[in-house]
Length: 157
Length: 118
Ligand code: FES
Ligand code: FES
Image (tube, rainbow over all chains, first blue to last red; front, side):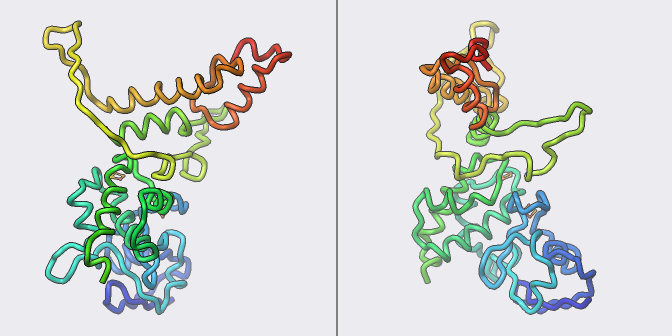
């Protein structure tokens, strides 16, 4: 079936099997492999993207369910001139990653979290990131990244 | 170091690889393998300490995941200590809520099974 959606501002139209998951649509049909697959059981959050501005686990959404919607992946976060999005910049500043596998999902989840709650406490961040697993970092620097990003003027525009 | 601490904490409290009697893994996805998240963990304060080992000439020690090596026994001992006054001598790792609950019940006065501890 033909599934149309906007991905990072670009209209996409691809012929895919009806059972295609959004994450596979993004990785295989669109060719954006920044969105990772860590589990396929809605547990790890590596596949988190924004669907109409809100975080979803793209392994748990059918591509067809997102037809006509607006998707943002990690590839769509930095500005055109290459300047990092404040959440990405905070990860760089705070050393918020080690292997980086969870990072695209973490960045998307934190972006959505900060939209809902622009001035979170550490506790808010920890609870908000419950669905995003990281084996490497112990979360300390990821939580710090979220808090640093929340103080970026760009996040409050 | 942070990640190592988290992994040790998780090993003490939640994470376990389980097989059935035929050797089939029962914890093969995150749906049945409990994995620690940011919610269960605090932030960490880390400091350098230098304690050379006396058993080799360089005083050097292995460093791989030293956070894991320390945090698992620390957490496990803390759980055992927290229920020691109830007569519990031992709880198998990971100290899941049901294991702690069973250990408390088994150690209850009048329950002979508790004497051997679990
Ligand atoms: S791959 Fe989607 S939550 Fe793990
Ligand atoms: S940085 Fe490796 S899983 Fe998070």
